[in-house]
Length: 126
Image: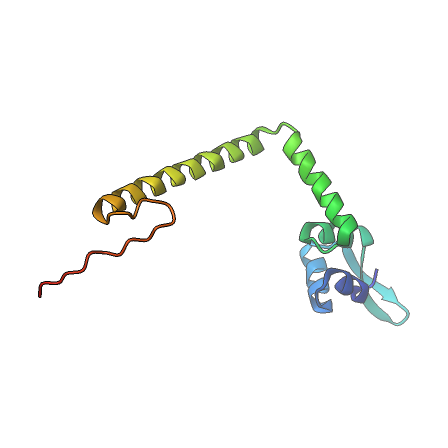
C-alpha cells in the first residue's frame, strides 16, 4: 500500500506514515520502484491501526466491540484486579464526597442536600 493511501485511510499526513513505519507503528519498508525509492506499508498494519484508533468505519467499530467483549468475558486476573481497584477507588471517592457534603452541611445549612446550593452566611457587622 502506498503512503498516500495509508495516510488517507488513517487520516494523517504522508510524513507521519513514513515516521510510523520507521518507528515500527506500521509494517513497511522502503522499496526501489523504477529509478527511485518509495515507502510502502502493509494493508494489514494500516487496518490494525485503524481499529486501534477507531478510524475504520462501522465494520471496524463492530470488530472493536467484539474484541472488547472478548477482553471483558475472558477471565484475566490482571483485568479483574484493575477493575476491582478502579471500583474500590470510585467507591472511596464517592464516600469522601458524601462526607465532605455532610461537613459542609453542618457549616452552611442546606449544603448537604442534593441539588441545593446554600449561600455562606454574610458578616453584617463591620
